[in-house]
Image (tube, rainbow, N blue to C red; front, side):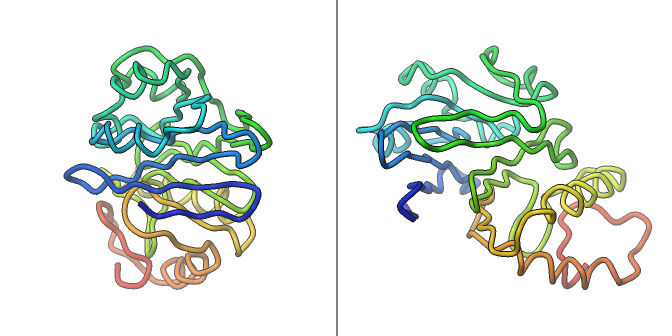
Amino acid sequence: MALHYDGEIQIKKLQLGPYTTNCYIVVCPKTKESVIIDTPAEVAKILAEAKGTTVKYILITHTHSDHLEAFQQVRSATGAPVGVHPLEAAGLPSRPDLLLEDGDAVSFGAVSLKAIHTPGHSPGSICLLSGKHLFSGDTLFPGGPGHTASTAALVQILDSIARRIFALPDDTLVYPGHGPDTVLGKERKEYSVFAHRPHRPDLCGDVLWLSS
């Protein structure tokens, strides 16, 4: 478990399950209210790290199965309302309580998380922003965008990143759905290299800024 704390927000990062999918428990230090972002496998570990906080929401960045393996158990154990983008709602094992459109926010204690709709990896993928902390789901990773199933989806995810994510400051800290964290300024510079190179017309799948 990795821990980030800056006085205003506490972030617990768990890498869980066969795909080392990241689960984040975001805590307001003042009130000990929290939000769980994504629910991969290993429910006991998620609940152990959430213990001592009041879970106000469960927020799902997208509904691919590796982000939902512990969903029903976490929902049942916490009783917290579930939020997801409308285009992902049908992919949940049970109905959500909140439909998070682009720009919608949830608050817990002194912390607020704003949904940014970033389609491409999936139609209803969202990132969640609190100050300089961005939980990017499977939209943006260190070194490239999330996996895309078609060239049209790659165009879509690149547009989401370029227009929506790169509008944020360079010092924004990025917490992806898998793997290590990154900083937005680094990704912006590497994307610029990618954007100024020609690419084969059928490019999609696992794309890297500096080598694809």
